[in-house]
Amino acid sequence: MARRPLPRLLRGGTAQLARTREFARTAADGATDVLQPLITVGRGLRRLAGRARRSWSATPKDRRGPTLLLVAGCVLGVALVPFGPGLALIALMAAAGWAGRERTPVKTGPDPAETARLQALYEALVPYFSVPDDPAPLYTHGGAWNAVFRDPVFDGDGRLTDLRISYPAYFTDGEAASRARIEKVLHTKSGRGREYRFRWDEEDNQLLLRVLPALSTAIAAQRFVTAPGETVLGFTDPDAVQRTVPVTDGEETWDASPVIWRTGPRSTEPHLLAVGGPGAGTTTLLRSIALQVLPYGDVLIVEGGGTGEYACLTGRAGVLAVECGPAGALSSLEWAAHETERRLIAMNRARQAGRPAPEDTRRPLWILVDRPAVLGHLAAADGHQDPQSLLQVPLRHGRAAAVTVVVAEQSDAVDALSEAVRSHTRARVVLGTAGPEEIADVLGAASPTTPAPDVPPGRGYARLGTGPVLRLQVPATPDPYEDAAHEAHRRAVLELLPGRPAAEDGVPAHRAARPAGATPLSVTKAPATARELTGTPVTDG
Ligand SMILES: Nc1ncnc2c1ncn2[C@@H]1O[C@H](COP(=O)(O)OP(=O)(O)OP(=O)(O)O)[C@@H](O)[C@H]1O
Image 1 (tube, rainbow, N blue to C red):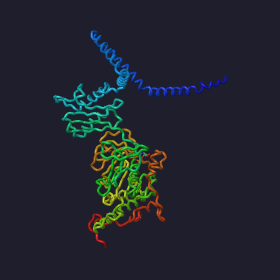
Image 2: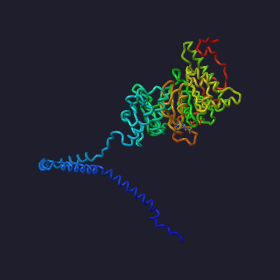
Image 3: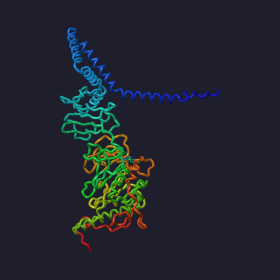
Image 4: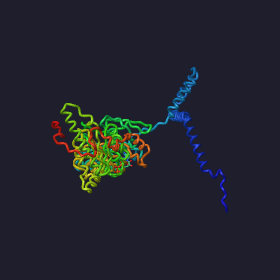
């Protein structure tokens, strides 16, 4: 039997019903908004009436007559006074409005579930914070948590986010292993999957636990407000640094806390090493640095990965070269070493003659080397020198010559880094899901927080010289030629890219862009004498 079509009303019935319901809900919401004052006054009148009823029933019988008389007298008085009834009505409405307002209950202390959590945490700490001979132990099984835990704060899911813990003075808080044991217990018992920061106040025998919110990933590449020689590596916690810079995301502008790296002749950390696992974001960090320095410096890029992730920079004003192969890397780095020597000699000569440093020695030169281990491997296979060995001169003498070296390497190839790279890169960044040992190996100090299990690309830690370890989120600076990248972030990078200067006759534009006076990239010069490099007087001729 042929199926009969449903009547039109029934066919579109579900959609229409949903629309009607939506309309009714919107109308009800609107009516509630409009009638809100009336609802509040009505609720207040009800509450006032309730209070009056309660106080009437609480009044002893022998006092009810005089009370009634007093009320009647008041009513009569109000009725006789000019405008009395009107004023009394206004006063009643105001009192009802006040009595009917919604009051958020003030929370006084943890609720039963939170109390149970704190008690469990306390019990878990008993074996670590007690010894059998202690006559008045702070921690005993079944003891009171509120004697040692202060200022607990919970999030909306009832999980602990802040806590001040007192511990006995005999606890060995100076030993890293003892601290790590306590931190592990607290981390496990308070909920995994979050990033905890522990601050040990050894003078007062107190430990401060705080769960840190994830750093914002909303900041994309842009012109940051910094002084010359300052580079924003990324952004960190507001209480970790004193400075802020304005950042923009679409229409919104706010102040963010940057991790600023200072380079140049007075820098104590003139070179940087960034380490991370695959896809952790070290290439993005180098791209971000390149875009920040290009307005005032020249950049030479050596890419070992060979994935063309710096292609957007090829041929741009200020980009001296983007080298992907071992042969190009060797010749470019050889040039960079000679350029460093040339600058030092020229500066030394100018100093001897009592003149300021020549103009062509002052423009900052940045050498960005991404994954040198791969290049070293390829060069060795061809029987060539490791390109890393050519970084020795820029690393050692670059600071005085305005030459900065940035090296990015993957965590599993860190062993292939040369001694010069390890000892001269005092600014360090580690990105991705690194364990505590790896973080400590790269940064030279333990991370201040428990590593989070899942981290977005560009998230990690930074340490400048002997400074504190800071959490870091690198600004999103994708390869603008990557289709999968966020459209707004790609556009932001494209806007920051400098133009392409016209090519000189027969010379590719990026090679023609090198500073005046610099030795051509492909020309090998005899190395300068040690005397000239170290600043011993040099006599011409
Ligand atoms: N700070 C960041 N913000 C947003 N996305 C990022 C950030 N850093 C990296 N990414 C994204 O993560 C992916 C990998 O980044 P990137 O190429 O920089 O990693 P990598 O460390 O160089 O890894 P690999 O060497 O394996 O390519 C890219 O798609 C990139 O756009």
